[in-house]
Length: 430
Image (tube, rainbow, N blue to C red; front, side, top):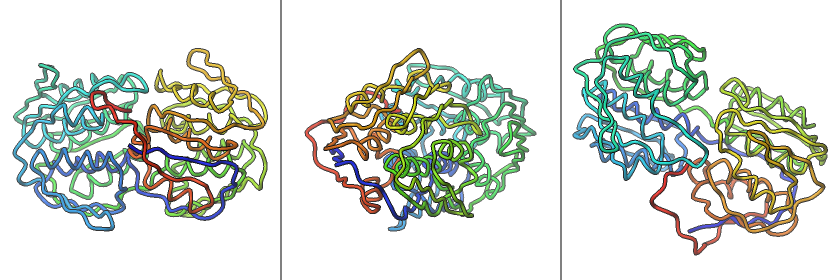
């Protein structure tokens, strides 16, 4: 098992190439189940979650090819199973996204209930209610969601709460349903929009993407397509914070500034100078210490919960006191205890973290608890005096492609080493 070792105190400078979005590519990979034709995906990030999704599709019978540039070609004509087993679903909650496509195309789906989640409850009831609203018979049996339908029927569905994967699952299922489906209180995240655009290129009839109301006119079949995956806005935001926390200057290439309005606004409030182009963002702190910024997470277009931990790290060394309010997941402050090991002054009060900025952090051994928490610990290590070691970095490999190589390329003293820690096999990770 690997660890990441960082010797902090170096301002970052240079260019970073942004990879394809994890949260976009996973549902798009699963969308291949909706057609017998080839689906080619470009700009696919090399991540553990992508590997897990490909393994799940292959177990169902999909034929998957990949070249050295991570272009993926998928054909699901020979899919022979409609069952997603616990052994794979437990390691990645996004596996539940196979429910809608399998049900829509094959009339049956059997998907394991996901296991526990480190950052809080993510109930699957909205997925189940969505399939039932489309006319499926659904039961939970022996730890599996078992759904059946001869053909799904369009319906008006109002989501009780905004859910990204719930919206994506219902949207994919509705593409092959008979009639029109309207999803109200739909998720508006750019990754949902990217999925809709891919589905439309496959022959789906979806409108309203990027708003809270989606309309899907069902069609008899979908065809093959080629799709370029959206750049990862969370990876982009993480490197923007890396520049700000070290007082450096970075230019992020092959990204989408229009998907990061809330993050860029908070970085400007912290004192960063931000400039943008069509596919790049530059952040320049000019050696200054950032100012503290208050954060309240919310569904898109609000401030993303996936950037909360990174800004918590930024506020640890900022001038002033900030309040971080987590309103999406109830248990997403587990990185706080690890940041305190570096000397951070943070108090937890319910769903809020009160962060009083300190002049310096000191390196220490740390343990990652989930994907975005691990990113925040790496960021803190970049500014901490001395050596910081982050264990359990398998978390970070789920969502960041070659993070130590990208950071070392812009001046960080960071490397990956072998650890004796062994990854647990019985619990799901966030």
